[in-house]
Amino acid sequence: MFKNTVLVTLLIVMLIFFSHNVMVSAQNYYPTTTGNIWVMESEDKAERLTYTVETSDESINGKDLALLKITTETLGTDSITTENYFINFDEEGIKLYKIVVELGPPFGVATALLYPPALFYPLTLEVGDSWELTADSEVNLAGPITFISTNKVVAVEDIVTPAGTFENCLKIRIDTKSITTLGATRGTAYQWLAPNFGPVKFENTQDIVYKLVSSNLLYDVTGDGVVNILDLVFVAARFGEKTTEGDVNKDGKVNILDLVLVAQHFGAN
Image (cartoon, rainbow, N blue to C red; front, top):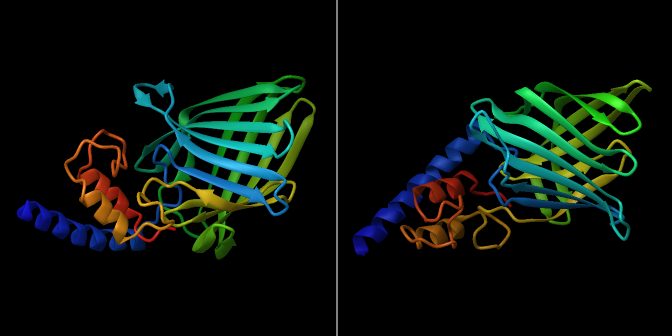
């Protein structure tokens, strides 16, 4: 028992050192662990924006796809729009294979398949980086529609939200263009991503600003709002056990993979 405790303690020290070096060289601006949740609300608390990462039954060419679901609600009403992004990951970043947008009446559901997949978010990001994706679909009333999104990292800012202050967030400008037989419409939105945390602020094309009010990132296993040494100790104390407590990647056991995930997100809050 003593030998195992020493081994795990040394492992923690190594992982802390590793995590700091990783975060300096390549921040993860969109953690995509299944179960992650981010909730934002507008400044007047009339609208809510919820991001969730879920499992899905979708697969393409043998690749299992995760689901990034973005739900927009007008609180106190039945107005809900759900955007479903089916994604996978490789050395380039988050790849987008399918989009399903539930628009509600009278437009119905818009579905777009992207193969080869489009780059949804690059693995690494810095000011000046840009990327574009195009998707074709069809909706009720409007008929065929082509959607083009051009994304560019335009600034690094500190963001104050009801859930806390996040430093060195990337501000991404999202220029959109929708083309139908009736003409083209354009819009500009902004997304702020915190390093090793994800979305903390969003401004839509109607200038409604959403800020983070709560989150449930799986790396914060102690639930104190920050990923720190206490989370590493919590996982290490359950090392080798088959338990849901500390099993960050949900593979049925607590092992080195769980420690690495927590260590890589050390300092996120």
